[in-house]
Length: 140
Ligand SMILES: C[C@@H](C(=O)O)C(=O)SCCNC(=O)CCNC(=O)[C@H](O)C(C)(C)COP(=O)(O)OP(=O)(O)OC[C@H]1O[C@@H](n2cnc3c(N)ncnc32)[C@H](O)[C@@H]1OP(=O)(O)O
Ligand SMILES: [Co+2]
Image (cartoon, rainbow, N blue to C red; front, side, top):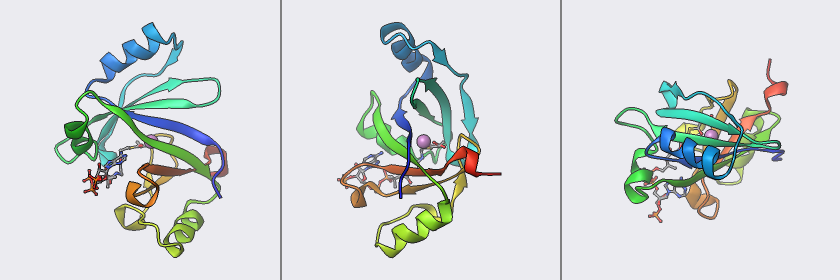
């Protein structure tokens, strides 16, 4: 069912500080502007790589889903992996039928690429928070 790895989410207490690591230490040359995703409760900034992206995420608002993660991991860390799927509802239905816990009641939200996304609880994915997003080109 899953297709390309779209991005790896990295939680950070400061996008500005993380950008310095990817730019100055690892030499990333294409880094986008920081923007807010209010509904998702995060600030987002993409580090663009030839074959994928690192999605830097910083909490936005009191109810941000990243807050608890940063309390446990104050310096930040790898937070989720995101795979592309052709159809988000079909993917969701398939996962639910297989007994996986799809977060937000299984209701897709619009993600940072402007396409619907869902998340699978890490307890059902061997400790890895998995995001699925509809392939951008397959979406009108
Ligand atoms: C913009 C968008 C995009 O790309 O388009 C994004 O990515 S937004 C990315 C940010 N948005 C999201 O993450 C939305 C989905 N995430 C969530 O709803 C939440 O963060 C949960 C994954 C349900 C975790 O919530 P919460 O911390 O309250 O934990 P919980 O009580 O349900 O479960 C706790 C157990 O899960 C573990 N746990 C929590 N976050 C984890 C993570 N990121 N990776 C691996 N394990 C994780 C805890 O250590 C704990 O393990 P133990 O029980 O062993 O101690
Ligand atoms: Co993401």
